[in-house]
Each structure stands twice: as C-alpha cells, then as structure tokens.
Length: 441
Ligand code: SF4
Ligand code: SF4
View (cartoon, rainbow, N blue to C red):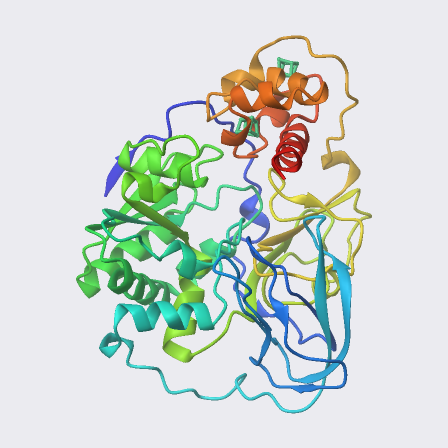
C-alpha cells in the first residue's frame, strides 16, 4: 500500500467524532407508514409525476420519470396507495413536488430471494441503461444522475476511475460501514463500473482513520486478483471533495469550471457504487440508503438502512429519541450539511446523515467585523480569498466575485470553520452563486 500526502493547499482538521457509530453494524430502520417521496432529489430537472391520488403502487414501481438528460427516475420505496401529491420542504432548504404514499399491501422485493443477474454477459450500454432505469444518483452530496456522469463523450478516454471512500465529514460512518460489511458487493460494483467506463486504472482513496476498511478492501482485492490500488490518505478536510481527492491521488488539477473527465477521471463514492451493484445484480431501484443517525444528543446513535421518504423525526425515534435536548439538527455532515427546522422533512437519495447536537457542542458565533487575519485564505483548498468574495457578494458586486473565482468555491465550509469573527462565509458563497444564476437567467 502506498502512502500519499493529502491535497497540497489549505484544509482544516475538525475532530472526526466518528466513534459514536464507526463500530455500529448497519440495521434496518422500520418501514414508515407514510412515505413522502420528492421528485427533485437530484441535480438537473425534477422527475415528472406518473401517478395520481388513489393509485395503488408496488414497491420499486416508477413514480416519477426523468424529464430531460440531466434528471433521474424516482421509484416507490414501499407498496401502498398514493394519498397526495404535494409540495414539500427538503432537508437542503429547497422545495419539491412529492408523492405521499400510505403503506399497504405486499412487498414484492423485501425479504424475498431474488436471483442475481449475470451482468458480465451484458454490454456496457445495457449496464448504463440499467443504472438509468433504476434512478441511481451520486449519494455523496450533489446527487448527479450516474448515467449522465458515466456517459463519456466520443474521443474521451477514462484513465482513472476513483473510488471515494474518504467520508471526510465528521460524524458520518455510512460508507465506512459499507466497506466493512459489504466489501464483496462494493468490489463487484467497481467491476460493473469498470466494464462501463473501461478505465486504465482503479484508485481507491480511504482516509487513514478507517484502517479496518483499508485492510479489508486490500485483502479482498488481493484474494480476488483485482488490480485496484488502495491508498491511505491523510486526515484532512475536505479530502473527500472530488477535486481535492483527485489532486491527492493523481497529482492532477481539474481546471476551473471543468469536470474530472477533463483530466481523464471519473469519481464515485462507496454508497453510490453499492447502489449500482444492487441495481445491476438485483434490478433494485434506489429506494433505500444507509443513513448515520448520530451526535451526542441522540440516545442510541446508529447506521440505519432507511427507505427514501422516511421522516427525519422517525429516524431519531428509532434511535431512542433525544438523550438531551438538541440545539441543532443537521442533515448531512456538520461542515456541508443543512440545519433542520422541520422533523417531517423526508430522507432523500443524498442524505447521508442526521446529526443532533446539544448547545455546548454547537458553535453559533456572534458575527463581528472582519479582522483581516487571513485564516480563511490560508485554509481555502481552492486558493480563493473568502473574506474578499464575501465582501463583494455583500455589496452585490457579483461580477467582481465571479472574476475572483466564486464559482470555484466547493462550499466546503473550511473558511467559516476557522473565522474568528463568526462571519457566515460559506452561506455568503451560496448566496453569491444564487445571485449569479439569477443574473444569468
Ligand atoms: S467554502 Fe469555498 S471559499 Fe470557503 S474554504 Fe471552501 S472552497 Fe474556499
Ligand atoms: S477568517 Fe474571518 S476575520 Fe479572518 S480574514 Fe477571513 S473573514 Fe476576516
């Protein structure tokens, strides 16, 4: 195993707090009696609703059809009856049309033995089509539809397929547990992707705080004779950001405004790869995912396999409720996630964790003027000047912010994490991007 340095510029070292759940085996969350399934759980256009109130639906049935190339199908996580089609607030603060299903009838997948598909006989275009049919999207954050990411333009060549097993956000352990408990399945998922993308090399990046995952992945790779390369990476946030991970593993930099394919790379995280395995081998749509429910305000933190559309509040209840009153509840990781106000928000395809923190662990600093300490500049992995960008956005000088690299911001939160003045820098970057989009429209 080669030991690589981390990405060269910036980064921070928050406490990883993974001890709550990193040795907790994944278990099934209860099936919700009401499931709320948003049509916009991915980047691109929302899916178009195909059902009406009163319709009976089966587990895994198509509820929403992708509308356009950058879009994804949405399937029913449970059997039952469509109660309503309504607008819901998502965990990321956006709104989406959603299908509400009341549980009822028989499960046609769960608990039944399904014959695995002999996928090695299928063509790469058939495999890609299957991934599209099953509504697979990136499960690490932006939820880019995978069939879009894996459609490589003619004349391009994939040099590296990179497996993102970094999971650098504090508290989250869903991918860690998948690597430990579903090692063979993850490796078979990589084999499927290898058949589609035909990369020269497969690189697997895992942060050094998961030595058990590194060991088991290396052992199984050797046993199976796969030529994949596992790299232990230094713990440094945001090591799991696609651009930083590529810098760490390949030494190459994705140019501003470009995608990894520009440097011959495609990246997917472990959760996504596991879903691809299930989609191809068991014809299983993306109707459930592993969610880490954690934080010191939670009675019994756990890694839960959750049906999409389950309420956040139901997951907290499944973990014994609150041990102490939480001051802040976050969907996703504490660095890039979203503070929650509504416990009825449904889990979507890209919600990797729910974190409940008591007051003493919640830093809600009072904002004071910038003291020009330069810390935000030092930690920015993209080499930006967050303090200046924030100033331009605040004054609504969007063109100036764009010129200074606003669109290169990865929204990693490192700048806000170190700012002694409590300036909400990353929120400023997000606002700046929205204003820039509005201006372009
Ligand atoms: S949020 Fe953006 S500006 Fe701040 S450190 Fe991360 S990349 Fe840099
Ligand atoms: S870290 Fe905060 S106080 Fe320091 S320069 Fe950046 S914005 Fe100003």
